Amino acid sequence: MMSKSIEELKSLTTQIRRDILRMVHAVNSGHPGGSLGCTEYFTALYGKVMNYHLPFTMEGKNEDHFYLSNGHISPVFYSTLARFGFFPVDELRTFRKLDSRLQGHPTTHEGLPGIRIASGSLGQGLSVALGVAEGKKLDGDQSFVYSLHGDGELQEGQIWEALMYAAAKKVDNIISTIDYNGRQIDGDTDDVLSLGNLHAKLEAFGWIVLEEKNGNDLEAVIAILERAKAETGKGKPVAIILHTEMGYGVDYMMGTHAWHGKAPNDEQLETAFKQLYLEAPADY
Image (tube, rainbow, N blue to C red):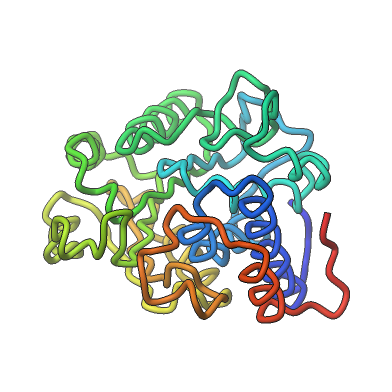
């Protein structure tokens, strides 16, 4: 894992947001909203919390694994992997183009370092992560498995089967985070299909549940992930409800679901870059 200071990581979150917007703008396609909202999570995970090794290996024995379930936020995943040295930053310019390893939803057959599963069919990632977590236990591997899910994704039935399974089988080396931004492609989550009291539901399913209201505060995200690590090994799986803002960092993308899957035009991109100012940006 690359060692960076908090200030360096905060600057990196801005750089990653610039990457996200540049990627989706170039092909007029992709999902900037959730990607921008989860930037602190990815930066915290790869910059401070997760134990991993480079060069990347698919097996990843004796290192932490991460599984992205809501694969449509691939721009933030790709940028993070590139910025932390998994593959060249310049490859980000191939996003969603023909023959690119950076498909709209992550896939494995192109061999992109950092990607262990194809994702984007919502609801499947937790099942995969649980299988890996159990495999690590069988191998005597003390590492952790992390997964990320959208709040709208929790409307999928397979998620709840997996939640039930994890607690019943005492899979206590997994930390699953829910990006709770309250929005999905068709509108507010409460309007499409309310999750009700999610905290209480997860606890009722047998999980240890932590909650962070400031999911776009890097230091708060690092702290909640470290707290989650301290709760592992107690016979219960661990969940984090992470409250974020879709489109965070770009004022016209915040407070709405409209930018879930829409790219900015030239003028909008320029406006966003002015808000995501870096004195010396390392844009590709």
